[in-house]
Image 1 (cartoon, helix red, strand yellow):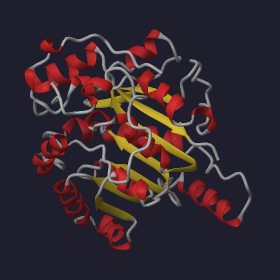
Image 2: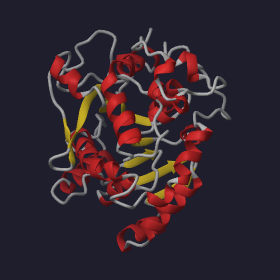
Image 3: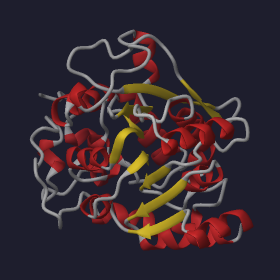
Amino acid sequence: MSLRTIPLPLRSLPRHRALPRASSITSRHLTTFKSLRSAAPSAFSTINASEISHFSKLSSQWWNETGEFALLHRMNPTRVEYIRQKVALAPTGNEEWSFETRHLDAQREAGKGTGRWLDGLRVLDVGCGGGLLSESLARLGGRVVSVDASESNIGIAKTHASQDPFLADKLEKGELDYRHSTAESLRDAGEQFDVVCSMEVLEHVDEPGEFMKCLGEMVKPGGHLILSTISRTPLSQLLTITLAEDVLRLVTPGTHTYRKFVRPEELRRFVYSDMGGFGIWERNEDASDIRDGEVGETRGIIYDPLKGGWNLWGGVEGSWFKDLGEACNYMFYAKKRV
C-alpha cells in the first residue's frame, strides 16, 4: 500500500513547521503508513515530546470558551452528535442471547429517550486534553476512561469535573477516570472498550500507523472506533495554518504541522491493509465504502462562521461534493466485527 502525498516543497512552509530530522515520520509518513513498525515493544510510545510540551503550556486555557480552544468548544456538540449517530443507533454487537446482553440493550434503549444513550458502555477518550469530550460522554451515561500524555491537561480536567456535583460523583465512583497515561500503556495492560475515541490527536503523534493499530486493538468485538482529524490538502493548509495560526491568531502558531495531516483515503486504506480489513471490521451500514481496498466511513465537518458552529457534511462516496467536505476537518468511523 502506498499513500501518495500532494508534492509540497519544504521551503514553501514557515521554518517552524518542519519536523526535526530525528523524527521517524519526517520521511516515512510522507509515503506510507505501512512502513511503520509492525510490532511495537511495550515501551514504545507514539507521543511526540514537543507536541506534549506545546499543549501543556496551553492547558490553563482549556475551559476558556473564547480562548485558544474556542473552535473545539464549538465543535464538541457536532462530534457528540456524530458519535450518537454511530453508537446509539447501533446494536450492542452481541449476537448471542444472554440476560446480560439483553439488559445492556434494554438499558441503552431506555437511555435514548433520556439522553443517556451510552449507559452500560465503557468508553475511552485518547488525548482528552482538558476533558471537553470526556465530560459530555460521562453525562451521556458512559463509563469513561480518559488519558492524556500531558500531566497538566489531566490536572485541569480533574479540577474542572470536580466542580460539578454530577461529574464529581462520577469521579468518585471511577465512572469518569482521568489518567496521565498513553494509549500504548492501556493497550499493553489489556484494556478493552466498547467505544474508542481520539479527537484531533492523529495529526499530533509520531508513528500514526502504530497509533491507529493501538486504538484498534482496544476496541471490543462489536465495538466502535471514532476519530476526528485534518486532511492534507491546500485548503487545510490555508485554513488551519495560514489563516487560523498565522493571520487570525485563533490558534497559537506552530500548533499544526502540515506534513503530519492524514488524508481520508489514506486512513481508510490503512485500516484495510494493516488493521485486518473486512476480516476484522464491518462494512458501512449504508454501503458507502464502495472503493476497493478501503475500510471505514469518513465524513467532513465544516465550520459555519455565520452561526459560529460546525456542521457534518454529507455526500455520496467518491463524489466531488463529499471530497470537498473532507478537504479539511473530518470524522472517521469503523465498527469491529463480533
